[in-house]
Image (cartoon, rainbow, N blue to C red; front, side):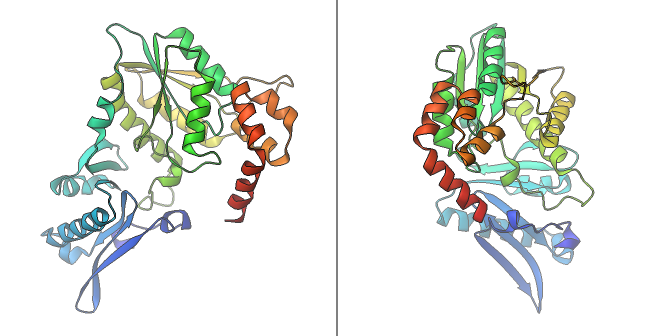
Amino acid sequence: MEVNGIQHFEPSEVDQIEQTFVWIEGQEIAATGSLAGKVLKYIAVDRRYAAEGALFNQVISQLMQAAATNGQYHLFVFTKPQYQASFEYVGFHTLAATNDGVILETGTPDINSFIQAIPKPKAHQQVAAIVMNANPFTLGHRALVEAASRENDLVYLFIVQAERSLFTFQERWQLVKEGVADLTNVKPVASGDYLISAATFPAYFLKDDQDLGTYQAALDITLFKNQFVPALQIKRRYVGTEPLSKTTNSYNKVMKQLLPPEVEVVEMARKLDQTGQPISATRVRQAIATGDQQSLQALLPTSSYNYIKEHLATLQERMLKIGRK
């Protein structure tokens, strides 16, 4: 695999694998490929068999058949730019491409059907977008959404759907909907498979010296710009600063580089609590762990606070389980 540029085998990548297939020629491995849910991973073909493409086609066909057996007909692959054409030849469609990587998909429902299901803006509306995990929805999130609501006719509020958080997607979705219910021009939208978290993003073909966060941000933002911006007429994207998060700062920096001039990036300073500290979901989770009701009240809108208060023991147990993994 290393000959083919696949160098990273972190547990976070390997643990997601459900099936792996190997092709043997003589006494040697000629090709391999793995399946992790909707994602094809660790695909490699020995260079001696790569030129004609037949073995590559077999690998992809086998992985797609295995996915279909599992009831999965919508697949993604993340690969190097030089392999983009090979995947397009076997039926994949490019969602986004940068100098370092490409995201492709095949099957249904695809991104076209996903975007078609989102209500479209009216003519001449000023449209903005926010993407958030909301783990959970805080007063800081609320302040960001309020600002976007005041300054635009319509705000698409995309909630990351990946289940990689303390709060389940359904919990986060409900808390966001309740937290913005009075803002009639804000439209919550589930992100589907198209706003991809670092936890589910294969990056095993990157070189050791490449900035993983920057690479992931560039692909995610390019996908957003290529697919969502024109279809939904988005002219602004709102983000909050995170003074203590290198990852968030890096993401925002890449966003400012890639989205303009088509999309204005509006970066807002974090809302502060009464002690002058930035409100963040991280602080909320810390307060959940310690059962600090006073801090929870200071950091959360009423709907989020009431939910957490009622389910505090369950959330603390989840945190213990996460810590044991």
